[in-house]
Amino acid sequence: MATGIRDKVAILGMGCSKFGERWDVGAEDLIIEAYSEAIKDAGIETKDIDAAWFATAFEQVNVGKSGLPLSETLRLNNIAVTRVENYCASGSEAFRGAVYAVASGAVDIALALGVEKLKDTGYGGLPPNGMGPLQFETNANASAPGGFAQIASGYQAKHKLSREDLKRATAHISVKSHANALKSPNAHLRKAISQEQVINAPIIAEPIGLFECCGVSDGAACAIVTTPEIARSLGKSNLVTVKALQLALSNGLEASHNSWDGSYFHTTRIAAARAYKEAAITRPQEQIGMTEVHDCFSITELVTMEDLYLSEEGSAIGDVLDGKYDADGAIPCQIDGGLKCFGHPIGASGLRMLYEMYLQIQGRAETRQLSSPKLGLTHNLGGNPSRNVACICIIGPERL
Image (cartoon, rainbow, N blue to C red):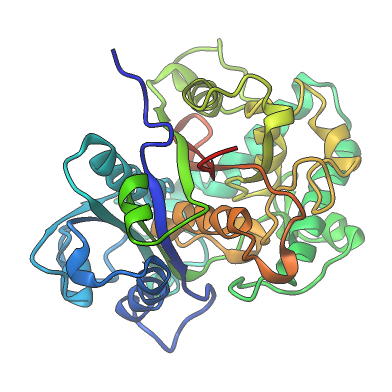
């Protein structure tokens, strides 16, 4: 019987590029930037890597959909390189491939790297995926803001909230993330904003305003993983291990009938429940110490707190306004600024979230370091509210 991967895989090293409008560099430069930090952190050489997983959603790095761009850029040692894409959860999918390969005993050391040059696509948001340049003119409600605005409306209707109540909470989330990003040198948007600015900003898709949307950025992030035994043999101590890694995909239920009311993310709840079971977590509100969640829009972060069972049903607004998820709250969320301030280079985001949790657990997050970080959870969401992919990863010290 399957027993899961709890503590079977350790993170040997991680790296992250500067996120932003990186007009001066190509995707290959971003790959090298993230990888150089990770390989130095791991304390190994490129020849020691046995296999790699490469995440990118769009083809800015080369033609075709193979792993060759990663292999050629890093001059990998003719190892197997698998290119993966799973909507906006592509970075987490690369990490999953590397982790499972190590956990299975197929390889000793594996690499996961994600990159995206979204600014080079020429679109103000995420580019259309196979529907041509007129997608958002002919199918406006299929845009990302349009889709996630419907989650806001569904949540508001279900819990009988006023627009003002919802906006106060989502504005607090945006303000919090921008305040956190001031201490995060790799973030794209590093400027404080006020509650009033968020509430009075132009509306992008009712009720989502300009300052409740994440930015469009270029970036890369990287992880190198191995077994705890190999990590110790390389002189590593205070290991950060993977406690759980779960992926759940929509099966058509949300879009097929009205058993789903449009107020939450069905896949996130399933993936979270599975991850808690794998990690032997029975009291997530007490045991999870910090989170990085997929805040493509501030409403997504609010709803996700309930989907992760960190807030009770209908209570996320109160928890947000009470500061539960602030930097000095009970469960800090987006301590580095999140997607809101890093932007969302699709292939990189899932790994970028893990990078922050990894630094926090190791006590290396500098001025944004939390005082006593426990288990860290990342939540990476791909697709739209009615058709999506949710990935939950939990990491923490090997010995709690």
